[in-house]
Image (cartoon, rainbow, N blue to C red; front, side, top):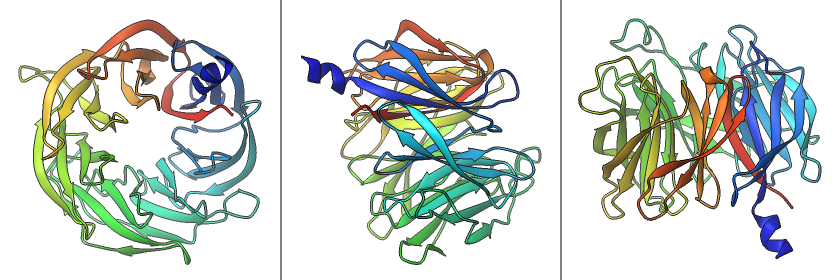
Length: 357
């Protein structure tokens, strides 16, 4: 009985914007069976540690410092026993407004997407677990038809495939999913054939299906999700594009985050403006999506959300109402029901979990 309880306990790490009341990265004890939580620690003295990445061995945590000038990458060691983060280093992200970060499976390379700078950088992980200066910063060049948002390149996420070689980088400004191949020995990124999205789509976050046959991108500007075949040569071929909002919706909305349930049966996307989570069933043969429902996110501006590793709960970080809302997820239907539980925290923008040992 004690072991079962232990397996349901996780550390919940929350990246935030620090311009109101937040002090940095917050860590909670979180039980995925009950949805109960309690604070464990705060890593303070950080500027906008918005997006987080966790090393494969779960002993290191990396964060962007999302600043319009002088963007940063923070590195931490993580103590599983206490839930405390110890800062190891601060380094330049190589560009303005870093908004997304990823670490490869070897734990040797950290990649960061600079939204403001329209670039991506690769940084070496040092023997200490800290990061060194960027080895290379790749500058994107291009624009799209939306003059307000696509005036230049805007790298929005870094996504490393399970083969630890293919790296997909949605660029909102260019309407492109750039494709690179990582050399894990040298830390080099070689450009491969990119995938163009619809003009004005604004691709943002990206996810792979657990079966490695499909991939999906959520398009921020035209409020859609596009499904792709993830081919053996690393190319992406278009399957379908589907709306994230009701057909009769007339308001202002931009999309944000995308995740697939651990069993691969359902996909979820977040709407900011409509302030909702859209749920879709995934056809296991074709990868096509069928809308299940669109439910209110329980707050304003759901910039990020996560499905817990057991697949039982979905947690939504509503940035503008300073709350993380906890939903129960029906594994059979994919539908969400609010548990009535929520965490109050200033400007939460990224959620990650580490199992307790």
